[in-house]
Length: 305
Image 1 (tube, one colour):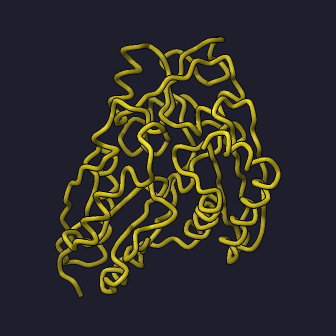
Image 2 (image 1 turned 60 degrees about the vertical axis):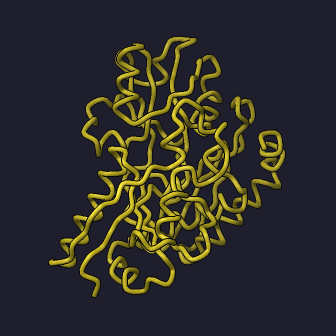
């Protein structure tokens, strides 16, 4: 059994929280195992003054970390699953998917208790095209501006501008800002990103000892649900630069999922649902994706890409 492990992580407060959480779980499971963190700066971390949609490419927050995995300088990496491309570099795999926290988006404001309360023409900040499109579909009067940075930076900008924005609930809660949440946006209003709320543990495919050590972190229901979501996304070949939302839940061996494909301005929104056996999660995700492509999704995506 390996007696020391090195975890590769981004250096944001959230990434450090996530990596320290996994490090703690490993120390509890394997007393005497030394677990250390190595901070790695990714392209997405370096470029903060450009909207994510304009940076382009996949793996904005993972490529540099994955290279260190392949080079053998780290043993595993902890990611937000939503940041993971559906196709991984050869030689790497997602070894474990942890139990998912609440996947909903959170609305934060110093004046208003919900998005519906916002006066016409209010300014709302977000870096996500997915949120932008779905919110504009319901509130085309809103002025949505790009907002990047970590949670503390975004909250500071909110306080200084006296405006409003909404990061993911998980970020706020894990970093001690749950009291700032005014509303968890209903999924009927805004579906989350693929894999949102779950952590992904990545390592080398041939590192069998480490993969075996990490197996206890797997949550079966979350893995099945996110397998369906990632299969849906993989078929559509979308990333964080495309307004795609999807969420699946597993209950007593059954899986139910809902997805949305939207135009950038929210003027065209396609929603659909699917249900089936949890064991067939990947097939269900691909089937729903194909159905939505055939029913108008292909045209929506073609106009964006």
